[in-house]
Length: 324
Ligand code: NAD
Ligand code: UDP
Ligand code: UDP
View 1 (tube, helix red, strand yellow):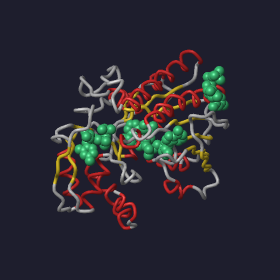
View 2 (tube, rainbow, N blue to C red):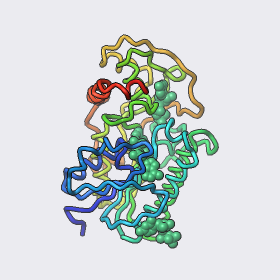
View 3 (cartoon, rainbow, N blue to C red):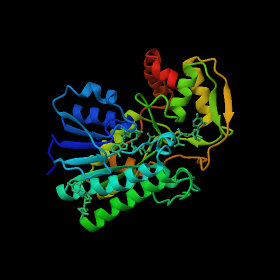
């Protein structure tokens, strides 16, 4: 029997997606314990929640054991942008693998549900398009993205083995590119880069010829889907389950849209394509639709408008802008 008001652990809760998840869970009446080592997350992301008596913030690194008493766990701790996860690749793999072991050990002891924030990067540079969950992927195990991709793949292995060997109730969500307010302005990801460049009148940096594609999901839609997956009692909810917006855009499309929505006079400038950069990416979201009736509601144009509005507020506070 699952209670209406639960104690929910969110690792990586001070990050971009995690902070929105904490906010939504508190709004639904749950008690939230947010664990973060502030590698990429910041206290400001959860500052508005600190006054809530049902919110607790713990500074902790998930590569070390953690003892808390909770009713369910969302495991989001891990840097997500290539610039951040390549800064200390060994720590990135440790966070995914040791973090998964520790959080799964915790879930096993407490006999509670645990959701893993996995990634579309488990498909690498995919040779099947769009990507269904049954596709095993095309990942370079020794390239610069491997610390993230292989770390997340190993975490999935651990989740399924704890499930089969120890009966831990798991949920594995494969998250595709997500954007929205509270993205780091200078984390090097394409949406934040283009918006910051457009707002500051700098050239938009197109890596390669800009014909590579991505599918961008607005953060509110993502959080709705993660919670729906956690709540689902269907045996299929174990996953893995793709979550993303199937709208597919080239980086040139995205740059043109950002320039139009910001009214910027910035021009486009090409830069070399980073090694192992996936050519195309789009989720097949049939499974999550069947399981939870979920489809994304916020299109790219509307989502970008909201994100640009957020970045404009960052713009006004100056220092972050200069760092970008
Ligand atoms: P983010 O970098 O904003 O958030 C990650 C959070 O984890 C940060 O607050 C960071 O400080 C924390 N963290 C990192 N290492 C930690 C450790 N060892 N111990 C405790 N906390 C640690 O990134 P995000 O975009 O919010 O991503 C959240 C999760 O979703 C990640 O697991 C990421 O891999 C996954 N994901 C995100 C995307 C996306 O497009 N944003 C896509 C696929 C998967
Ligand atoms: N663990 C934890 N909190 C708990 C229970 C376990 O952090 O409440 C960690 C524990 O330190 C161990 C990991 O989870 O490193 C895996 O636990 P498990 O019970 O699977 O393995 P074992 O303790 O037998 O190595
Ligand atoms: N990209 C780009 N300009 C930038 C940053 C990224 O053209 O300033 C490209 C990048 O090469 C990739 C796509 O945009 O093809 C998405 O990059 P991001 O780092 O946001 O996400 P990921 O590659 O992890 O999907």
